[in-house]
Amino acid sequence: MVTIFLPFTEIFTIMLMPIPIILLMLHGERVLFYVTVMVLFFLSFIIYPAVSIPITFLALISGIMIGFSIQKKQHPYETWLKGTAGYLFGLVGAYAFIEIVLQYSIADSYKEMMNESLNRTRELFETFGMIQLSIEDFELIREQMLGVLQLIPFILVVISMVLALITQWLTYKWLNRTAEKKYAFPAFRNFQLPKLILWIYFITLMLSLMGGNNDATLFYDIIMNVSNLAGTLLILQGLSFIFYYSYVKVKSTALPIVSILVLVFFPFIGFYFVRILGIIDLGFDLKKRITK
Image (tube, rainbow, N blue to C red; front, side, top):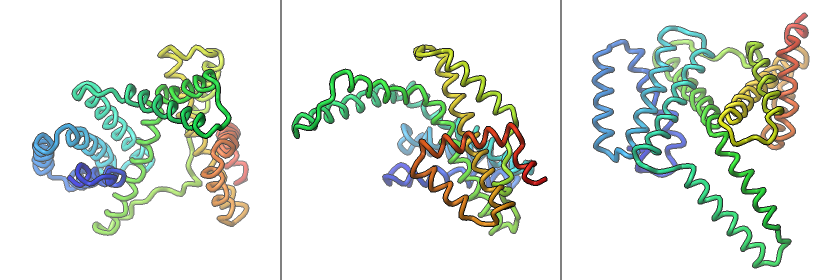
């Protein structure tokens, strides 16, 4: 109800809602869990169902995935992976509910908003006598903004990764405080991807380059989304190497802090170099070489 009726609270509550589901799963009483699920769905059909049903589904599926992994005492990164999958399924389900049941097209709404924004920008330039862009320039900007729609799967995965990470961290904090557990993520400097990610990145990169400007096919969209996701994971690998190098050699937190600031304030340059560093680390086992 807070998420539905208080504006802007969903930014925070969407990460908190799965936690009661997780705690119910860890409690171990199945009857209590099933009764709670039925009550939640009953309330979601009564209280503004157009919004509450997808929110309830998102909280349930993500909470079940994270709770199941914690219950089985799986590795924190494996729990993060399952939580990401849960959030992703929830977001995709909410997207399908909006598109199919509510008959509301998010893509069409985005296109309409984008066209209005470009038209207002052109009128503003003309009003103040600023340097006017040609119609071709505005069309190029429009095509670039429409490219975001092709990356919706990648965007949903990244959002799911962030939400799952925060929810899992908050759950660990709650369990450590109330149940006297010792749940924690391993040190980020030890983060290590399988080398399969490197092969996936290079293969999808080569396929995207060979595809040229053929951006109207489903295959090209899949390749671009997978390539961007693999590239994002390699950025995490490169950042973990900076943390590892600082811990082993420099013995200072200045280098990781500067690296994060560069990624935040100069993302285009920072992401490029950190991704290259992640590729080198994953391909040549730099962490092991530094340890030796």
